[in-house]
Length: 104
Image 1 (cartoon, rainbow, N blue to C red):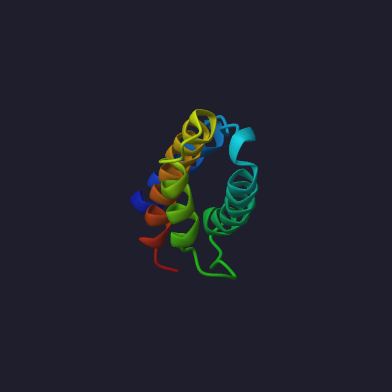
Image 2 (image 1 turned 90 degrees about the vertical axis):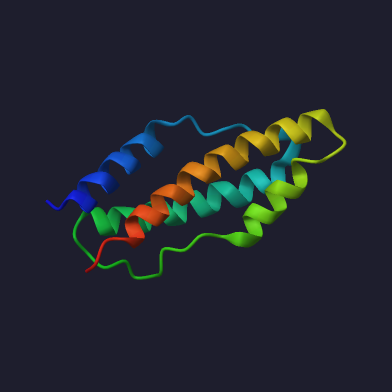
């Protein structure tokens, strides 16, 4: 196993052990992140099993922008939820970046 693959394996394990944040005050963004997380995790599993993913592992800049915008919401609950979702997205994106360094 290459060092890049080991690093990815550790990153995915960390991500999978990370509690998924709640997003009751930003339910649309929560749903978007749940969907993106599931999609990316499926692709990451392909990479971990030595297969080239059937779709490109890419960040979702629109989701990030929406979450960043929600972080400045006037609603305290929405602001807090968006910050937690954004922190989770940060970890997910770091994992995507690690996977992007692996050459098939």
